[in-house]
Length: 246
View: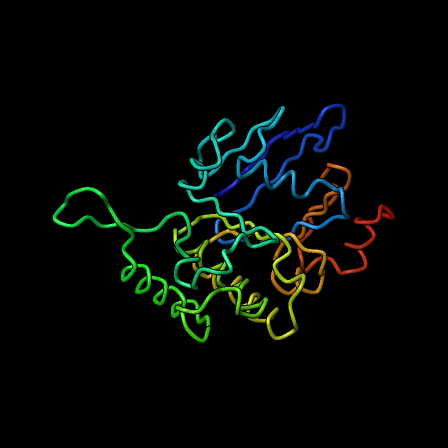
C-alpha cells in the first residue's frame, strides 16, 4: 500500500509554473531517491507533501487519507516529517533538548498549573532513542553546536524518528559530511527502512542515492521524467535524465 500518493500536483509562483502535474507514489518502508538539477522543483514538491505549500491543482493522499487541504501541523501529527538541509537545530541547546525541540513533554505539580518542561523525561527518552539508533555522541548534555556535522545530522534524524513518523523526507543529508559520517547516515536510513518507515531522499550525491534507495525518481523542470528501479539502471542513465540528454 502506498503511504504517500501524489496525483497531478501543480504549483505556480506568480507566472512561473514550478510543478507540472506531478504523479508520485512511495510505499511503506520504501526508500526513494529524488534527484534533479537545481531548479527542477524538488524542494517545491516536498513542501507540497508537508503542507508548507498549498497545491494549485492535484491531490495529495497520505496513509489512505486526502491531506491536500491540511496544514503542516496536521500532516506532521499524521506522520510526515521533513529534515531540512539546515537541520533547524538550536546550537546552544543540548542534544536532548534538540530532539524534543518544540514538542517538549511537560508535567504539573499535583496536577495544577502552570506546567513545566519535564527535563528528566526528555533526557531519558532522548538517550533511549539514541541508543536504539546506535547514535554515538559524547553526552546528551552538551550543546549541539559542539558536535560534528555528521553527529548533528544524526540528531536531526533522531528528532524526526522520536515521534514515530510513517514518512521521512531528507533534504541533502550527506551534502557536507565526511565519508565516515555519510556511512552512519546511510545506516540510519537502512534502519528506518527495516522499521517500515518510508523515506524520500533528496540528494545530488548519486553514490549515496544508489547505496540507499531502491527506486530513483528524476525531476526536470517540474516534471517526473524517469522513475527507475535501482537494479535496472546505472549512474550514467540517471545523469542523462538529469541533464536532459536522454
